[in-house]
Image (cartoon, rainbow, N blue to C red; front, side):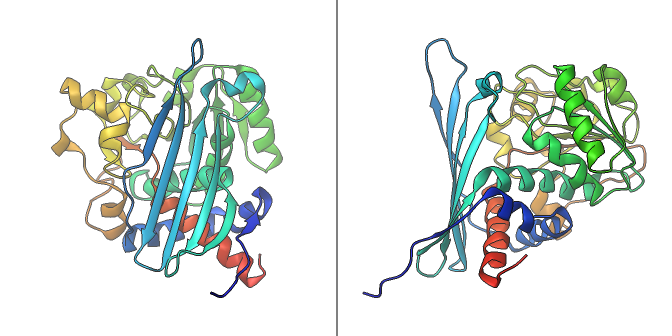
Length: 321
């Protein structure tokens, strides 16, 4: 048996350097066109007396014998009070032909960037071409990536940030200004929604934050945060008023913003207009008119992680970026 070196380790900074949004978004588009095997993620509840339920997620994906990988994720919702990220993850990339472990990559950077990139990818089909104002709902790791992702597909000129804690919104807005964006904290969520072309939500809310009555004609609502059936970021009115798209069929089982309206009869399965596979392959129609209200619900897919990890590893193997 031939000996070989173990997997290389690629840290957060190196991963980020390979995953600029103008490069990552097209890579995700290509991945959804090509397809991959992505079993429904394994989610294990981690219950503890007196604490919010935490989760352990396992997300594998492979494309024939070309690529193979798995992401291990832990989600501890109360970590914010400790000054820690709620989500921690690591990605293991393997050789698709032999199974040999190639790289262990910072999963938080992959998760955040591919999540923001997937929203922008969907938004490239669903948001108005002239959408210039963005409201970011939330102030965490992924929320901070959303303006740059949206700016890769739309002419974003104004960014507002709302968070339950105004100080956190102000801190994120200040960081975005340092990146050259016209960003301000928004103290009133309703006012921010009514003033924005794109509303992008990245929270761990379990009760709806966004009211459908606030959405103006032509708005695009992007729902990222809810990954369990008991989590909601938008109310039933938003679901009823909007054309609804999802990232993958996993949203039908995992996302409260979809499962609850389906169960209540607010949303019919046949009324869901498509997913990212259909949008990218031209099999599902996106926005039809300038006044349409569009809604995209994502729960994340292992196909996105695999595409991002492959980009990172290719750069490392080539000695770039």
